[in-house]
Image (cartoon, rainbow, N blue to C red; front, side, top):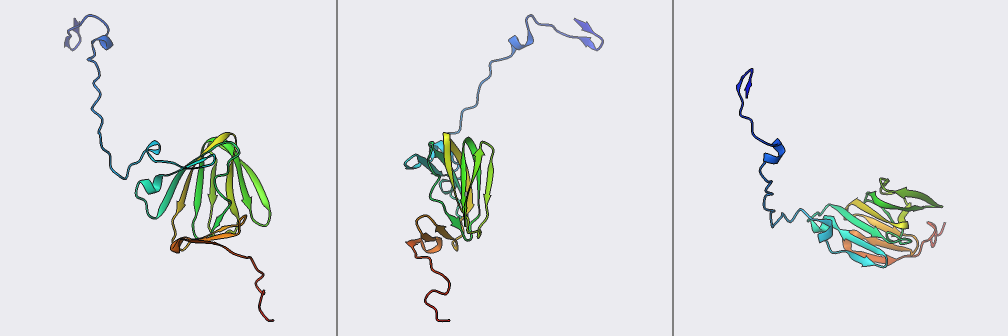
Length: 179
């Protein structure tokens, strides 16, 4: 066939039918140790909670990244607050409640797309409780060796830098002091 620019050879059939078959490249069998797939990380299972330490599996030392799957009615962990570590949570799927416990307890609904920041040093404990469909979230946090973690329900305290956890008795500042 002739066109304004010259002769063009025309073939029979639709051009897509003349395309060669796509050949996928061979997948790499090995990947770097710093790349992990969530499904490849063995979960820590406690009751209705599955927690995968993705940061640790990838070799992270100064920040943590955990993937949590909670069955309906299950807590993400004991309510706690940090003195030096900051945490950010992203709800990937499901719905539930964020419990904040300071002088009073507050409940806040969360669902897919909710982002919760928990700065250090607030003295306000937090925990998530999964709603009826369950709750899946990512937890990111710093790993400060100077962090002290307080668990108000059980009156436990955790000193991360020395890996010691114990139960304490809360006292008034002036207890045992002569005025």
